[in-house]
Length: 139
Image (cartoon, rainbow, N blue to C red):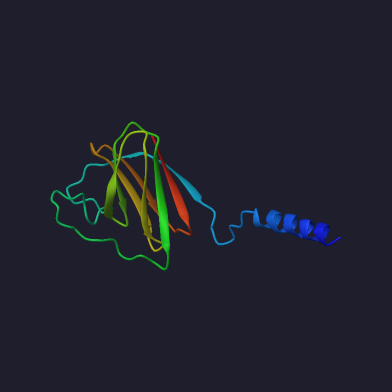
């Protein structure tokens, strides 16, 4: 009798331990962005605070980390090579049909992508991250 109770309790314990509990993990958000043409202007691009560096000197950091880390994923479904900016700060370049990600604080608010040729752009304002966000770049 003791052996069968022990076996049942052991099986129950392992069955309960096998459940994947993700109560703390927030669901990922996926945002699709369509390309728009960059209009010629005389001034600087208002979406860029610190552009891609041309030296090994650190140009600056984003405006703050927020209360927790957020992973921002970029999926490029276009033939463009795109410079990525989060809160106006350069975060990297993503190749055509490639993926990239950056770690940022949950306090970020804007995502901006600009083709390296300067002909197309992708914008998203009002970003908020609770875990991870995925941005899909389309033509």
